[in-house]
Amino acid sequence: MNACPRRARRNAIASCGSSPATSGVPVAGAARYEPDPAFLGAPFLAMPFAPGPIPGDFTAGDPWLTGLPDDADRAAVWRSFLDVLPGVHRAGAEGLGLRCGLAEELAWWLRYLGWATDGSPPPSPRRRARDRRAEARAPTPV
View 1: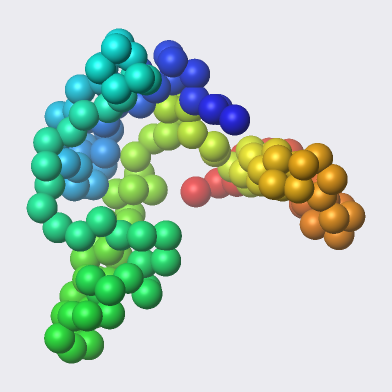
View 2: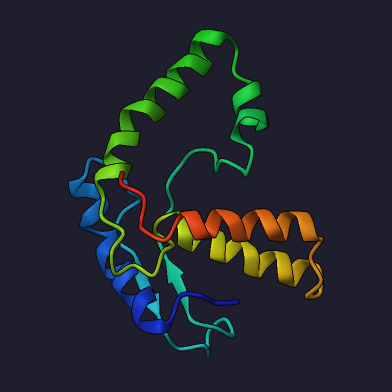
């Protein structure tokens, strides 16, 4: 289910050094794309080490956040997130091979649902997703 063709990956990597940074999004630094699978068995992206925790899928429950000494420290993390969020929204996603808009997001989840259920998703989620997809033909404005 790789939805990111080689050209899109290269474009995304080329943009990593400029687009997010010029939008006010802190980035880890220059990345290097290695297309030769001889090293690790597949093409890969290498970036320099950036100290700090790596947020999980449910950041609010991550031990590095819940383990902070007090609410003021946790509030500082959330405030810094809110400071960066507008820059994330200003960074363009066009040409990066990312899903953009509700219609593309729903199509991805429908494919995932089909995969996760061996092609036989329950009727209710499938019907609801199809209804939402019909409503979301145009990209959603940011």
